[in-house]
Length: 233
Image 1 (tube, rainbow, N blue to C red):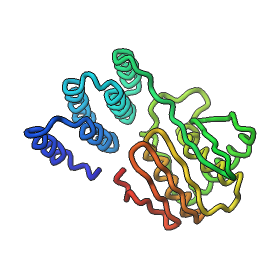
Image 2: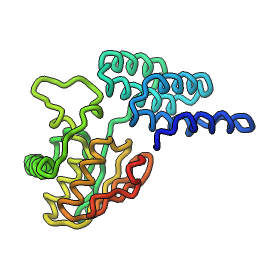
Image 3: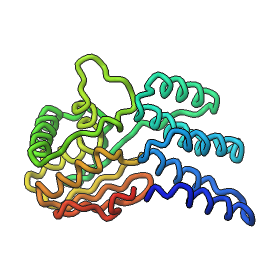
Image 4: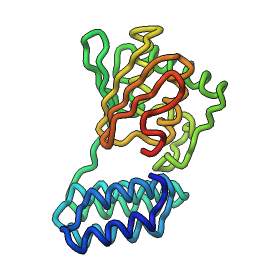
């Protein structure tokens, strides 16, 4: 997470001299490379994963997603789409739909990105608009490198990122419980860097605690605008 990739590779090499290779080490390194947009080393690590763990299909799917997202982050959208499609078909696995769950008033609700299925959807997206205006007023600028596909007609970088499932779940909490001081969300994928930055600001602006449990770790966002992971996620 500190972008010490040479040290990380050396650690893996030393570990493998006396131990069986660990796929977790490679997915962790790829995750850090995603933040750094290091295409060359990411390709090297993914190819090494394929040779070492040919039967661990689900872990390889995670590697495919990370590498395709790296391609998108550097503007190679066509390569990202082709690579992702070809590799997923080759591995014979499906990609998880990103979901965020939250419990409010004893009811568990699940959202996917740009989800308009809830009966209070219009209120939820109005709240997202309010949150976005507050974020921008406090200096937020969306990071388009976390968008992993080409924009569709009528979309903007901001509309795509603000429609992520985590933000819908947060807005839903404020709709159901205006002024709430505690929000808890569980996601089945890793929170993106743009949402991570936005949630830090939301916690500070609305002076509330927000806990987001993603596939990698539990993030505690505090009213001081900081996260427990110290941005090493």
